[in-house]
Image (cartoon, one colour):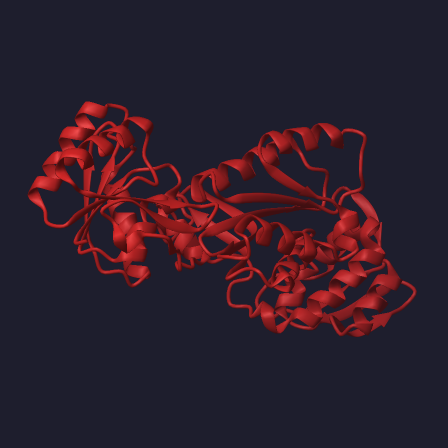
Length: 396
């Protein structure tokens, strides 16, 4: 097979997986004219294939995939002008699949498909190369954004080797469990008595200060717990004042950001689950594919994990889950993962009577909800591992 013909699909991975797997000389992608920018799509796909080390000539042909007659004519022109063609019918519309069948019938062209459920390619006609062929493609977070026209930007944990800080993460979460109810006010307190400037690790202030329009008093027991774990050093407490040093700039950020501890815990649990090929915390995506957040549409995914070609988008909330958060997560999942990807929202907030409505909305959007008890009892790795393995049958 020298030429691979793809039918554009809203699930980004369907547009690239055949090329990744079978490495044709040319890939011809039939895409709908209503796309915002075909030129931008081609550019993003070329960046994707370059990043993946896949040398291929990429040709985009605009045609309405809802018009079977036009798709059929276009397919015939492509097949007649190129050698050794194959059509991938994993994506596309019903009309385009009908057209592909018609062309295959009288041109005797190869046709194959891909099953997400079995993670396997299957021969439909004259495609022995794809017969019962397991998919060996493994993606990372950057690849998922590139294939969908986006780009991965540096997040808040950029440059920090979190895998080397698992003991610190565990210690921080154990402290969080004990002091969770007053965590927000204590983080606000630390924000007021410390600086985010590079190299500035000192924190000092009065025991009671104004923070977020109210008076907040330091929790001495929390500081002693942080000092005992080595997260802060040189702790000094007097009747009127407090002073200490953060262990380093990463710890300073963790203790100045209200949600950082929850994101770190979920990241840690994804690693512990042992079923993912890539895990990224604070994954910032530029929707237009640029390398800057300035004048661009960007979003941050708290934790993103990938097994094989299927991404999991996770949002972490220390407050009650709002409908807006569910909607935003669903949009990100659908845009950069497609319908085969998964989404999960994790909350450490106390349960409320209104949560049943939230669960219903989450179910409608196919978003799994993990609440505090499962997280605190260490059940998230088993939840992740069990569901991922069940969905993939132990395969990637």
